[in-house]
Length: 246
Image 1 (spheres, rainbow, N blue to C red):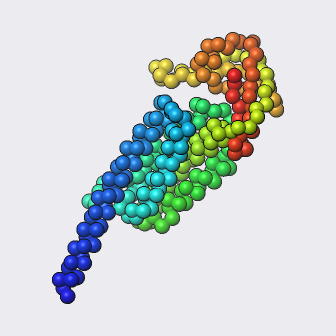
Image 2: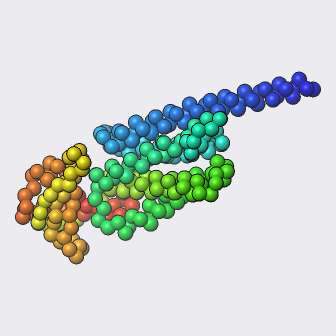
Image 3: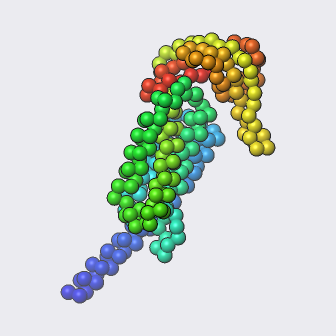
């Protein structure tokens, strides 16, 4: 009888060890994939749709791994005797889509964006927190800090996903407006590493006053002050108005 119990114990121990090894390998693979996908989306998202879908699915897979390997994959990356792998790096990488959204699309009115962004971010946070014993075991201040960091990450991810999906897959017919260029200028980052190009325009459409708009360096070079440009206003796939300058 004792031998049977010992065999069962050994079997469970081996099974747990195998599962923990699999958890470490899968988590490492997703973290590496997350880093590569983030670079792909930020530097050269070609083909664009595939890159966007990949980074959209990234946190879904990461959260799935967290839930599947209960207790064997962590959110915090602190060192422990058991050395459980952390999936947080992959979640952080998914926020890169927010930067892509800011570079590629211009939202007409952000009032249409914030409610769905907050709702999606809160939903993702709720899924991660639900039934998570790791967070329950933390001291309150550390639990609140990690939850806040995750919420910020999910906010960035939600903004990027909603804006890109709304604009890139929008097939609505554009309304064309004309505006005059009042001024043009460049914002340069540290050591001119990151330049952003802006045009200041007259009032157009439903706007009550003129505003600046970010454009590509090619568009900036071709445009002169006092020239007229066309603005293509669209309603958005998700009902978030946006526009582009051509």
